[in-house]
Length: 185
Image (cartoon, rainbow, N blue to C red; front, side):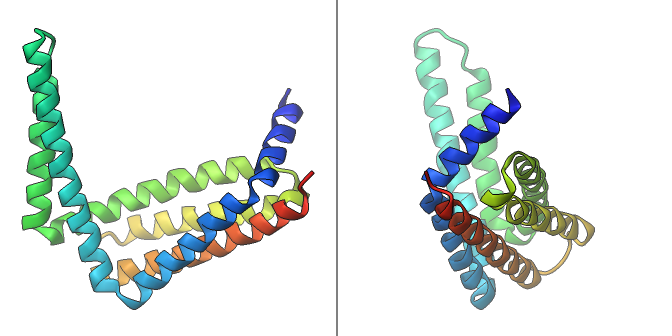
């Protein structure tokens, strides 16, 4: 059964090689922006999160009100909405603290996705770019560890790391995409 799943995954990835390539190109573009505009990149990420959290909170409160009108449970929805709004306001008021939390969140994300990519690489056939997918996963894991080891680094260094990571990750995905393209059925 495992071989059938691997074969199916290989075929689907080979058929959609362009989506893997697009992920790689977007990663490289994001990386270049982060390298050349680090301050703006980090501040933008903090304020995008702040806006998202406030909007999410408003929708949470709206959901709570609608649930209350229908005599359904609403208290947890209201609490979630209020917490989201508070988080958004705090992120906007204290962007430095938000950056530290952002560093930890990105580190955890990189570790989890890196481990999952390494696991997927073991299921991918060698001719379909197994080692490149594994390398992308390894790069994610290393990046996550580096962020956790030095969480109080400046926003400038974080964005450089983020930019370098995104470029390396993007390149590995583009190589995988072209390997997949050559294997299309």
